[in-house]
Image (cartoon, rainbow, N blue to C red; front, side, top):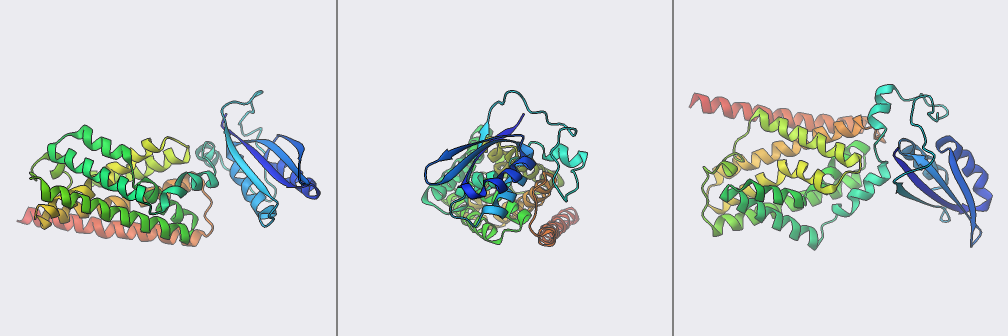
Length: 337
């Protein structure tokens, strides 16, 4: 069973109101006095209820300076708490989730936990910039020599993971500030990756016919499917609290190599081939965001403004359609030539 330990601190006069909330989201909680006129409540919450508990706590006590809540993971709980439709804790004035909604959201971590996993990677720091540059250099040298294992090593570093997921998460939740930070960090990292590739392409000779490089200059429906799968799988793993390295491989496979290839071809004086690699990156980025937003919604993340979320999703889909049309036009021109 996936469960969380939620510890709550607040003034003694509010305990009755708090206990009313806890009975709706947790079957097990206990109280203890702490210094300073505070009361501490510890409760075991099934993972699927953590989101709604935190939302109600924030709405009720979020403006109080004396209120604090901590959430931590639990490896085991005895006796176990059954997670079935029959034992579900209902919410007043809300319809119960459908069987499909319950199935897809039962193992997802809360929105606050997702924020915590991504937040630190949305800032442009020296460590982030150096990691991006080193990842791009490793990917560039690996592609130049045709060593797939080296390219995978660059993927595991995964510097663009946080910003990419941040863009999709911000679009899903309708958080402009987070989206601005994530997009700025992503674009800065992408530029650094290209510049690192430029240096490699300028210093060492490259052969555009090496499969690892040639594959990053061509676009096909299979590449679109790969990028969509990367975005969906990355969000699925992230929302389950999986290893960031695992998620990073899923995202980096569609982003880092094309950026490094773009820089290498620019540094080697082949801008027309570089344009093909940059086009591949653009399509991959759009696909990752389309799949990411859809998967976040499937996982049950609650948008603050459904109209805004669907508007952003439709914008990404429109960009994908335009890029797909350009790709199809390029294929037709190639056949005609």
